Amino acid sequence: MGAVVWGTTEPKASDMGACGEAPEVALGSTGAPSGATHGHTGDQTRARILDVALELIADRGFAATSTREIAERLGVTKAALYYHFRTKDDLLAAIVGPAMSELDALIEQAGADASSDARDGLVCGYVDLVARHADLIRVLANDPAVKECASLHAAIPLFQRLVPLLAGTDEPDTAQRTRVRAALSAIHGALVRGQPADDPGILRATALQVARAALGLPEPASPVAQTRR
Amino acid sequence: MGAVVWGTTEPKASDMGACGEAPEVALGSTGAPSGATHGHTGDQTRARILDVALELIADRGFAATSTREIAERLGVTKAALYYHFRTKDDLLAAIVGPAMSELDALIEQAGADASSDARDGLVCGYVDLVARHADLIRVLANDPAVKECASLHAAIPLFQRLVPLLAGTDEPDTAQRTRVRAALSAIHGALVRGQPADDPGILRATALQVARAALGLPEPASPVAQTRR
DNA sequence: GTCTATAGCTTGATAGAC
DNA sequence: GTCTATCAAGCTATAGAC
Image (cartoon, rainbow over all chains, first blue to last red; front, side, top):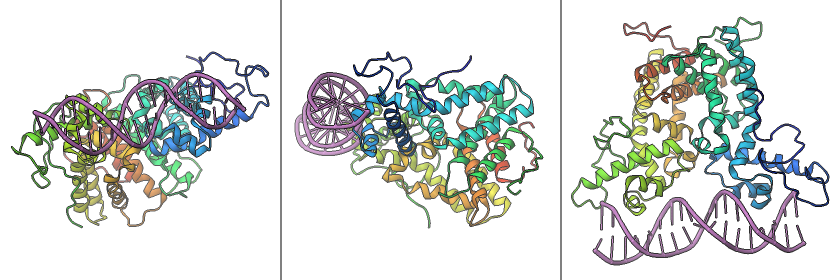
């Protein structure tokens, strides 16, 4: 399995199809079929939608967040949303896409190397990923409405692939699988910022520490400062 | 602050297979609402509703579970539901009530004792509580729709009271609070059964082990068998 | 690209017969 | 205690003007 496309998401989008397999419909007879006349306004709007939608969904949950609410907060109409995304599910898929691509790459990179160092690298990478996408990962991992979303059923196997890699064995037993689940949950829980101005560095360091302990990975004796104890 | 009444909850009926946990604590009054003519048929129905509703809500989330769905699964009509519960929020409060009472009692019992033994006792108690109410706690802790539910805003302070008690200090700093959040999340994550027939004992032991490690509590050198490692 | 307007459906909740 | 029938309000999604 090579590179997987999660939605059409990438940092600098050059085309605007919300859905990967959607036929490209010529929207305006005067311009190029692939985009806006000036080439960037549409993408900016799209990015704003993703931004606001994530904020709301992370706060209220996917099912409890209506498209009306999202549009209202943006100062546009629902119809504008539906120009950029075919369905509400597609919107969620686009929000989640970039982080899923990263996770995919992380797992791919870890390969099947079960050495302690490789496992530690995977844990570090995962902590880093979750730290940068805290809201998003919390939605993915906790919101039950997500697993009902058809555009996202590909995300669940990804998390499952994480289990044997972190356990360090191809067929982990109950205790090993449980330890992995506990470690992942601990990472998620640690990185949901409690107080508004908690130092993110401390959050990350603590998450890593607890996850390593859960997985039985030794603390590396590194020159960098440890956060006490 | 003494015993708190959480909703109009009473212990649910003794049979039933769907949830499979034995609720045992008698919390308060005879649960008969204003007009039960025979005194027990209504309670049975009520218990069935709570049971089925929890199952559905745990699976789909609160916001995504409609009263129609609950009623349909029960073979009754929505109106029957609304005879037993004034609103959908009240239904959730009744579902969650017993476990909240238990948590309340657990915290009360732990008092302000910051000794290592007291903290360990609290962790053990919490693991036990979550193990017996896994579905429920997951909804409470993870479903964003819950914190929007007016009947339940009293539950959030409860979890917050847990933090200083587990941290072992009245004013925990960022790292200490983070460790507590990680430990609680780890417990929740460990106790959500992955495979249908995972040994619950292993799940509980692993949850306890990881939580202790996260909180810096020593493993007690007890005669009871440890689960490997 | 964004709008207005609206179709078509589901929701939570109520009234009143039995 | 449970039903049928019904409500207003909200929802996702679409059509078509500008």
